[in-house]
Length: 247
Ligand code: BEZ
Image (cartoon, rainbow, N blue to C red; front, side):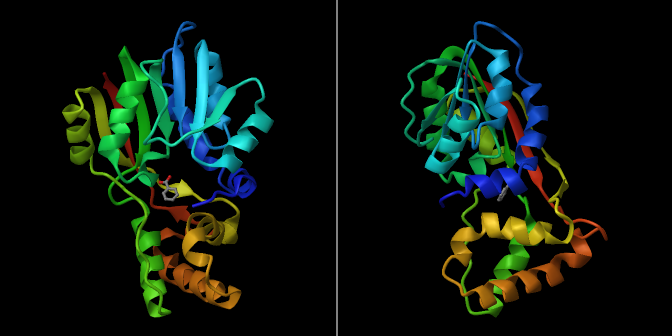
């Protein structure tokens, strides 16, 4: 999926806002090197910049990295594939917010993280847990079927057990791992859910005529209204998996 970095920062800044809480899991150490894996437009990388000596942001999207470089020219940003990281024992911390659910092969991902970490390094991550956005995804899938399209989820929302098993298989020692509900206001009032679908289902919508897209949006809104509309805003049923694990 190619990301629209401007739309992302304009309408989905809440992704980084929520990530600020995750930053509190990282101690301030002027000597440490931190990798921000899946840095997007660099908003959290800029926060990490104050916590260590070397901070690098990587993302697979060229447009995200271009915007990150524009916004924070003093920080090192690189386009990299998380499943083929070019780092060998270079980082004390690998940090990642709201990224792993985009990556199918968590085993290979954890191997790449392990290679990138120094022997005493650790991983701090949070991403969509099993059951994340179930209301929206189910409504979108059923609506696509109704209009003759086939929706196949591209997300990998892991269970705690599955992710813990992979960490341990790759010799990580788990300090903390848990999942939790994090209802998330989508912002922009009545338009929040449509904005969200335009960004995160852009691949599925790309080949549909505008009238079809609008019919799908309308039907998804109708289906979800009883569950995730609070009268003022759409509140998405996000669930998070948070882990801290040492190499
Ligand atoms: C998430 O952060 O949980 C998420 C964001 C976009 C699409 C799916 C999940």
